[in-house]
Image (cartoon, protein in one colour):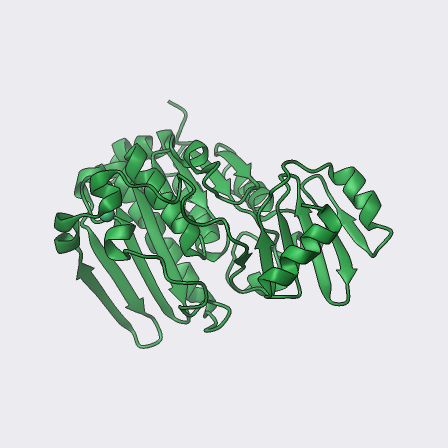
Length: 344
Ligand SMILES: [Zn+2]
């Protein structure tokens, strides 16, 4: 057994609830992290350092200057290079732990790919900023029996909930209908104090480690809520919700992964930008870059093409056909720009 690289994990294995046996379980574990923003960066870093064997990083976006106060896996060079977050994060994580098997996936989690990306792992981490993705995760988790750790951070407030299908309440038990876009504060409208995300991501990482080491039967089923500015931490017992269950966790109703919900253009949290889903399939980035270069400044790499297409408007197109229109929050305008330049 060469998993431990000498005494690399000695302080961790000395922690008796984990021990050498727990460390071996971590080394054998496969974790998917959806979203490599603040929560995803922190939990990925913590899990890579803790010795989790395999991480799949799923993210649709590229790093921005406004990410740097809290997205711990990126630096100024990543923003300048325009490398997708999943790829940049994977490079940093490999430098932290060369034994980590890391699989960066630059896509938007959607009904068409969620089961392939999430159905075969041991634990899923919610590093997302939107309820569409969270409901997709919840349904894959319930259908395939995969535990997942929901997290959220806004302002100086955080929440964490470990969801174990068949044991605890699921996300739909807690939130029967996802809130309408714009109905809740986001990190764009309410802001976020950077370290809040570090706390929440770290708590999520502890929950993942507990699920891997102690098994799914030890999940407490309580929602942790904290207000770090006021210094208040509390837990909410969700066992009454678990006893009642919901259509997803009791009756196998999966409207999101079956495509009956979702799929609309998505305003991106924390950015003056809208994502437009792929409709026409894969894109030839090289020829697109050539076409767009007649309109404005183009930045291209093997994952995406980004171009200034109008005054204050930037279009980024990814190889899977997905586009992010920056400089607007107007979904119709974003859709029109994508149609104009991609014909989708
Ligand atoms: Zn449920």
